[in-house]
Length: 98
Image 1 (spheres, helix red, strand yellow):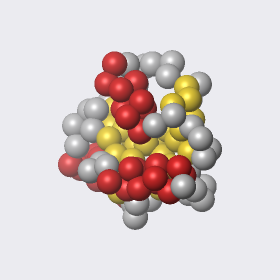
Image 2 (tube, rainbow, N blue to C red; image 1 turned 60 degrees about the horizontal axis):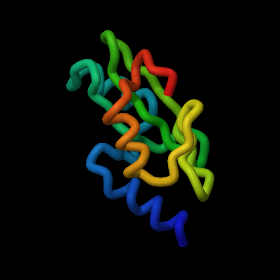
Image 3 (cartoon, helix red, strand yellow; image 1 turned 90 degrees about the vertical axis):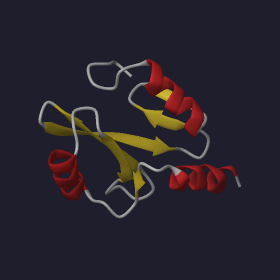
Image 4 (cartoon, rainbow, N blue to C red; image 1 turned 180 degrees about the vertical axis):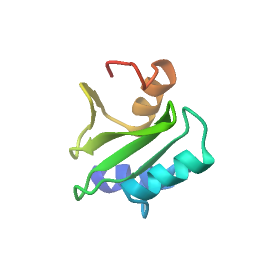
């Protein structure tokens, strides 16, 4: 049940785009975004997500994994979407060790 609830929370995020692949994310962010613009999308690895972020006229992709109990992002583990968002609100994504 927790897994379904967390998946629903992800799907409700306004910056989640489930049907966007890596190439399309790069095109959209480069054509329409400014540095710091981002989107969450489904990863090519089934069940995982990718955070695509525009930075210095390029797009960087970061894996985000939901294990069923926590989100794993880099070296960090977050028990909820809110905790993950709080982390990114307080720490820069690019140039960070997060």
